[in-house]
Image 1: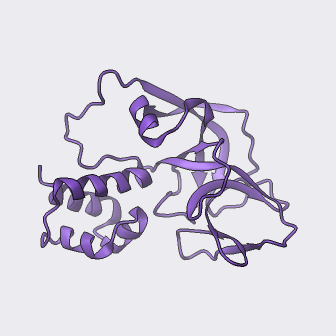
Image 2 (image 1 turned 120 degrees about the vertical axis):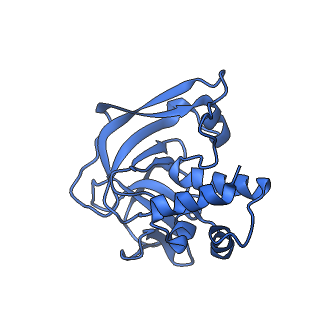
Length: 215
């Protein structure tokens, strides 16, 4: 299998050949990605697994899976209904409700749940509007949120509400000496700092554990 060519095709298709955007979005070292893209470094099996796992974590895609790849026959499909609520990633005009389902579903396999250490009963799926988390979570993406994971792990993405807003948003949360930084992956948006002595209440809906970006 030509891992280099498959990676090149992926970067060209989803990032218009922009290596740096892909490196940032998928948390892959830029210098190595540059060498792989220009075929000055061959992707071995170990490197391929590491790259694929990082891309899978951000996009839900297994880019090195062969065309005839199938999940093991014992790995059942798990359906996660998409809720009517819309998570904002930059837009501020939706109030969340979490009790109304749509007919749309996100599909995972039991093996993926096992790999990600998730339980089906804790998961809910939502639509995302806005581009503040691009290219990690694009406008129109579907995200799966684990509502049991409410303890903040530094630099992970969460669905949150805070302050007087009823709006649910997906943001990357970072801790620093002054407080909690509510960060956007799209650097066109300013980060927001909620200081530790602030009266602003932050509610963690859950951690984003799976992303399905629209192609």
